[in-house]
Every structure is written in C-alpha cells, then in structure tokens.
Length: 126
Image 1 (cartoon, rainbow, N blue to C red):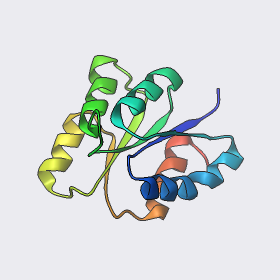
Image 2: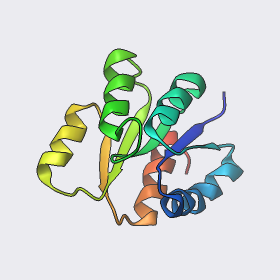
Image 3: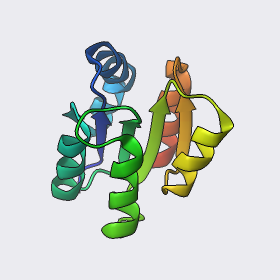
C-alpha cells in the first residue's frame, strides 16, 4: 500500500506551496492528492484513505472542522492523521480543531520545513 497525502485547500497558492513543499516525498513513493473544497476533501478521504491530510479550516461546502469531525467521529477513521491549517490563530480556534479530532494545528503562514518534517515523520520516512 502506498503512502498518500491529501492537500485540501481552496486557495490555489496555498495548494501550490504545499505541493512544492511535499514533492520530494514523491521520490519515496508518496502520492499527493488534491482537493479544492471541504466536500471534495471528505469524498477523497473516504475513497483514497490517505495516511495524512493537510486541511484548510475555512473552505466552501464544508469547513475543515466539519470534515475533520466527519472523518474522525462519524466514519471512525482514527488512523487518518489530520493537520488543520488556518489563518485563525486564536486559542479558541485551536481548541475547536483539536476537539474536532485534528492531530495537529498549524497557523498560516506556516514554515514549509515544519510541514515537511511533520509529514515525513508521520509517514515514517527519514
């Protein structure tokens, strides 16, 4: 089974930055998947079962909080690691994300090195 990472963000420049940050992992057999809104992200998670999801909070159709809750609580996919990415850096937002089932919470702007390190560590790639 190949490792998969889903990038789910409605902002094209954020998707591109995440793709560029993670593209070296493709050399290690990681498949990068892309979704542009919350519903597409949820559908992709249920169909593809990525090991790791970078999920924007504020998106059309379903918010990142809603997607996270559906994945973790309704579908019971605790093995899917979800990282919420948001411009909302207040502690109340972080707490909401973690209570929705997020495994990690990064505030935009994020350091690409932190994203890469988290992804490679989560997937067990040195």
